[in-house]
Length: 367
Ligand code: HEM
View 1 (cartoon, protein in one colour):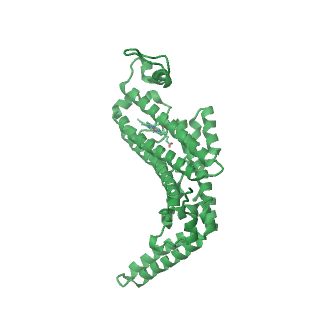
View 2 (cartoon, rainbow, N blue to C red; view 1 turned 135 degrees about the horizontal axis):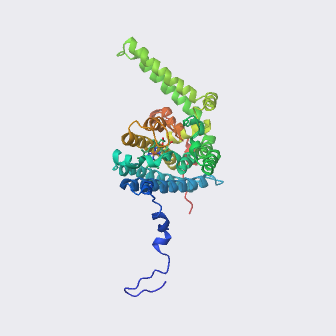
View 3 (cartoon, rainbow, N blue to C red; view 1 turned 90 degrees about the horizontal axis):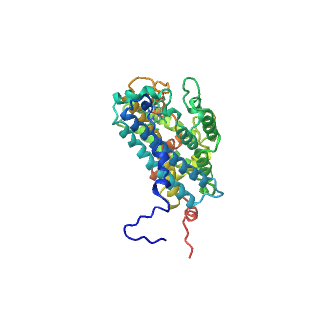
């Protein structure tokens, strides 16, 4: 290490400004309005906020790549689970930041926006390649997307970008990786969990039905109504116990997760108190957090758009806020994880785990 005397500045080594390529980064804010000789003050904010988003999208993709690398290893052990949990948590914290960035943009009033909005046509956030790559890496399916002017979402992208986004549709997604990981859950093999669970649920549901049928405080109409909604619940459970019904739902597109993965997700959720299942449960929880994080952002973005442009059409040509609100719930990657809570039973009705399985699930420390 070089020694410096007081007052002497060493700028010969790596230099902050160069390391971060700030010349390029800080020279990348070119106002369209300035081309007419009258730069509009708030266009700078508009550009900086969008660029900040794209930088964070880049970081999210970086984390997703690492998550996929962890999943693609030969074995996916506790270390990999912890690594994936850490990455997903980071993505989720970034998402919270992305949400509050909208507050910064909303310091621009609709009138301020109108001063430069026409310069933007036909460009739109709809063309964000990185946003589409994130969606596709997570596992949003092309068939679930809304058509835009009767065409797929990629039609507004330049050719090179379109190929990139379409290629990401074809690549293995996080959804597929999680499905395969869940389907490999080892404890399901050694313990006939499904039979035990089915028997417990059967007992619980029969007791519930008996309570409704014999409750002296219910009038006949009320009883009939409650029995009707009870039968609906029964139907859902019966469908969950029937692999053929599950396969039909998968074929129809209303279920995405394989039957085996669904069983594993339910097993992990039911027995998440067990130390061996805590990290897998945390992973499932974070997948929901991340999926929900994007849905929340979509709603927040749609509300901001409503506030900014009212009922006007978007610069990209869509029906604006109306279109975005319709879209908000749609592009989800892990909707099946939201089905799992339907089938959770109270701890009192949960089948006990066999002692040999509990022993198998213990962490062992070797001296
Ligand atoms: C004044 C602020 C904004 C307005 C008025 C606005 C408006 C719109 C509109 C109307 C659309 C639908 C497509 C269209 O017709 O153009 C859209 C889509 C989109 N915008 Fe914005 N936007 C704003 C800010 C942002 C910001 C800061 C981002 C961050 C990257 C962003 C990202 C997106 C994305 C990713 C889509 C596609 C949504 C999807 O298809 O799921 N927008 N925006």
